[in-house]
Image (tube, rainbow, N blue to C red; front, side, top):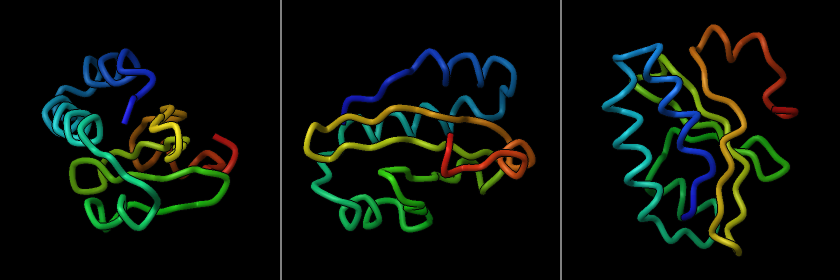
Length: 97
């Protein structure tokens, strides 16, 4: 899976240093993934939520942080649309992120 954009992750973990290791692990795992659809993704990330319109929410560091991505399985591309604390996530409309 090609993930766009890693610099957003780096910027986030520079602010939240406890997120660095979990985000690096998430990035490594997702980059190596060859998911054909949401069922494949859910097999590897059972707590991930598909929220419609190709959007998936991942819980990071025990749900302390959340990432919303736009995923295209056929093109093997994933676009990071949002990364933030759980409190930040609660303030947005995840389906429009």
